[in-house]
Length: 150
Image (cartoon, rainbow, N blue to C red):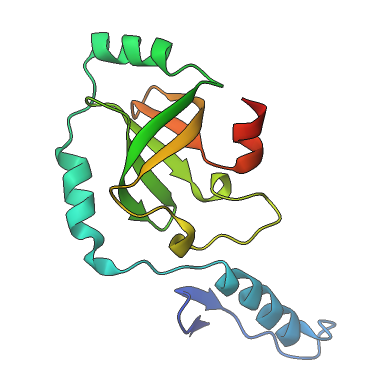
């Protein structure tokens, strides 16, 4: 097994013979597809993680109010808090935090890159997809088609 540069992924060399045909070509193709979608965010985002960890989670009563206020399909505004490889967090007011994951930034046929995220501090408009009780987060989408449906 070898480490594929820049991806953090392991690949195993498949030798020709034993009925595998173009095995090595298939492995390279698969790894190439994965590495096109693999982003490495700047490791200096530890301050953003720290700021998120220091935000308190909504108390039970606050969360109950937030779940009603941020019902699925509601259009909300918030301020971008931080960028991460999986998406970005949004301040929805008080202790309530929203999350816009990568697939909810652009349309499904459009490639998404963290450089496509709105800048930290920018106010955005998003549609609520739902609430995650365990993490006490609101899931959001800024995808144009999702906003148009709301």
